[in-house]
Length: 118
Image (cartoon, rainbow, N blue to C red; front, top):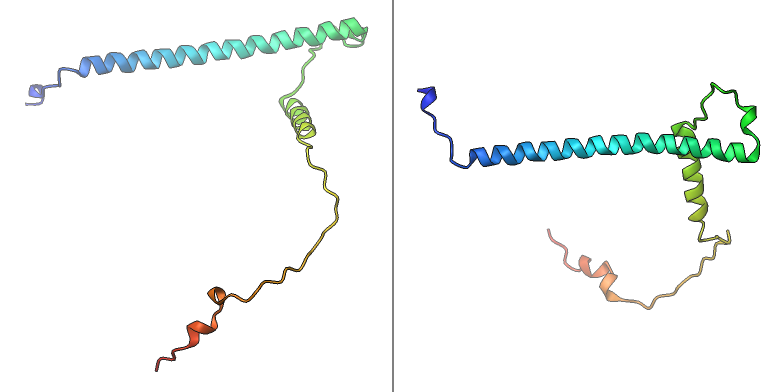
């Protein structure tokens, strides 16, 4: 009885589409992984080249890696971002002006008290 269940005709097309989608997403994630891994190596080589140009590379031992931690990079990026976002300088002076309004019955509560219910 369990073997007599019939599947719709288009189920094989759906399976092919699902498997293709999974493969595409997996390959895209794999590609991004290798791009970011390569980017880290390129940036390290760039830092070493700049240190060699300025003559400070000899101060670093040969076996030691020139590595900037993620927390340090995030702090530097946040400082640069906040520096560029300084667009409004406050004067630190509060000015309070009293505005006199003309009487308006629209916001008066006394008209709601006209009828007293017992």
